[in-house]
Length: 534
Image (cartoon, rainbow, N blue to C red; front, side):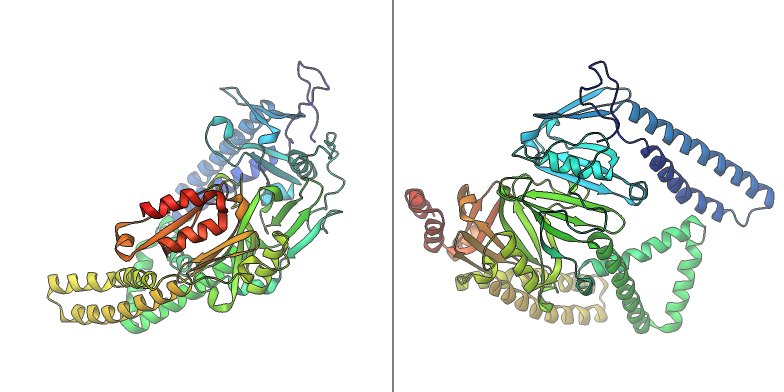
């Protein structure tokens, strides 16, 4: 990996240092942070006299010099106080400036290794490595992070840490991995490519709740930027004048168009940054059963690996709007995966939003099945009482705006608000009935081969195919409202993904029969007792 170290244990003790080019990365990041604060400061003083502006410029320059110097010094001390070693049984990291920290992680507990490289690290040929157990139960379960290593050394370290059979030789310092392709190159020898990015998939990016969210956020960014340069009130006054001149209706329509256009551009940019260069491959050499390897990212490159022997199923997710255009994304249901907040990115993503045919093909290849279980399954319908529950819940949610407008109409004594409340009630009731019926149509469960399949959701939907031998326990739950309708929810618990997956709103006898069929006759006595309790 990187240059060896001269520690008391001897020159061949296996300890390594991080790459010194991270000093340059720290300096660049510090300059960027200073620019983000200094430029608005100077822009806000553009109306001041020349002397005051010159003094401010000198102070900003001195501040930049001091901050960058402190950042580089702190990084130099961190480099001097950080070393790591990958032994046959443990990964050890010694670090700390004022408080010395020594962390060790048994290699058999390593579940995730994430290799990331932000734009600055990529320019320097470096990458960061995060090593985790997929759990967060104690201090020792916290991910170990090495920032930063040479890119080939980081990839080689990833392969070594995930090698359960001990067939991959640890590289010598600076040697890297001979099988790793360079950035933008072809797949390493022996890898099987399952999916690569099709640029046409970008058309699905704007069909997301992220689009209006980003469009509205743009107005907040505009106001904040105007506040930095002292023009926030001017922007607000100008916008009010334009709104008065155009009228309420035209202003609302124009505002909606601007939100959609800005949100569309922003969502396209987010998709390109997150998934550009995407490639899903199967690496046969890391674990006995093979591993799935995902590479993606335009500015920040991400590389995550999932051992197939820890895969318990997949989830086909169709966000609102995406299902209407025949597209879906694929997430892994696997043990040992950290949550998205514990890593730089969500490690569950196997495929971005793509045509449903592509999603089904990826599901089949990932699960090593001739046909995707999520496509081949014949879903069983749920009782009619489940439809009524969904219509009532959806209608109650959709009628909230009408209730709010009605309260305002009563308090203000306004006929206009009363009319708006009536319209909102009619529209909300129709939308609630429609969403409730859609949720019922999306409800289903079934068995196909070694997988149980459950589907639910509206306006989007989620279909999960879970390996039957990956189910640990079952649970029947029944709320007071379900009890009145004679329904229960059957939960299958697994040490993977969300932890448990439900078959919602089924009859008691149907739930017991499905659990028996799924789990086998050895559970029949317990399920019979559950039937009696329900």
